[in-house]
Length: 100
Image 1 (tube, rainbow, N blue to C red):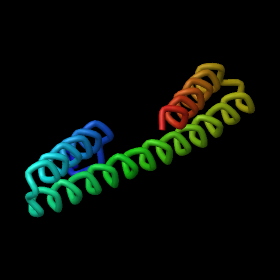
Image 2: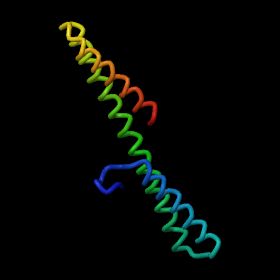
Image 3: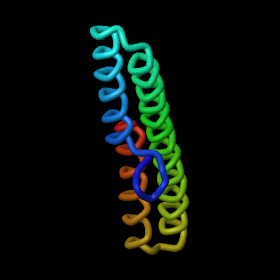
Image 4: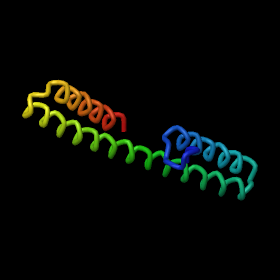
């Protein structure tokens, strides 16, 4: 987890790779404790990465919905700035979803 307690893709990958490395060292040296701790850290890293992906995807959905709402309200009310802002937010949401 990141320092603020929310899942983070980068730290998830870091722990996944570190866990695999520790497990490999355990396999090479025959140390079952290293093998086990490596497997555990790898699994925790993978779980954090997937949680961060899901969080990012959900945030993208929220941005798309909020942007769509603002775009419609702006179009109906004739507020071009709000409509444009909504369109930008929708595109941001699409990008967030694609990245995750």
